[in-house]
Amino acid sequence: MSQTAKKKNVRWVEEPELGFWESTFVPAIMQGLKTTLKHVVDRKPVTQQYPEVKPELPLHYRGVHRLNRDEKDRVKCVACMMCATACPANCITIEAQAAPPEWPDRDKFPKSFVLDELRCIYCGMCEEACPVDAIELTHIYDLTGESRSDLLYDREKLLGVYDRTRNDARDPVRTRRGVLGPASEFQQLPALGPATGVPQSDRSAKAETAGVIRTTGVEGQR
Image 1 (cartoon, helix red, strand yellow):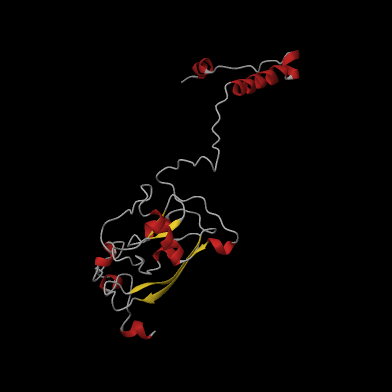
Image 2 (spheres, rainbow, N blue to C red):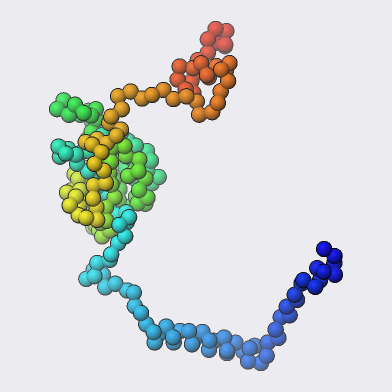
């Protein structure tokens, strides 16, 4: 494209000159007042008179946590620590204890389960990480307490939230996959190969466990 054609395609816009009234900004102020008065006359309030009027929360709202019970009315948690590991706020503290002999379907259960509701950011990561669907977030939003310790929810308090919400249509138990969920069905974990392709001549390809390299002979004595 020639320089002449380029100049023809360019449209130059000159900055308008401000007159006397424009330089006083009175027209702009009047236009703003006109918009304000329009909203005053055509008023459509959206304020809810809480607490007399309760808000209608979406179904995916994440509020206060609960610990679910299984079909035998036991705490469903198996103290695997996955929720505490996944929690980005580090607000879950679990103390595991060996399961009693009358619970042959699990090895552990939480002797102590404490969740700091003030520190929690309600991201739902604990709910996603739990392999047995033991912890869930509910629709309860009006969380109050007279001290910080009142908002440290222990195991019994979290189970109480389950008892309160188990029959609420807004907080259904989200799984019916079994007493302990799919993770409890594993008897032996399958062996996993390396995440990337490794030549057969490489030592890591002959390792007993993926990612583990065992040295032998002269190399192992170094």
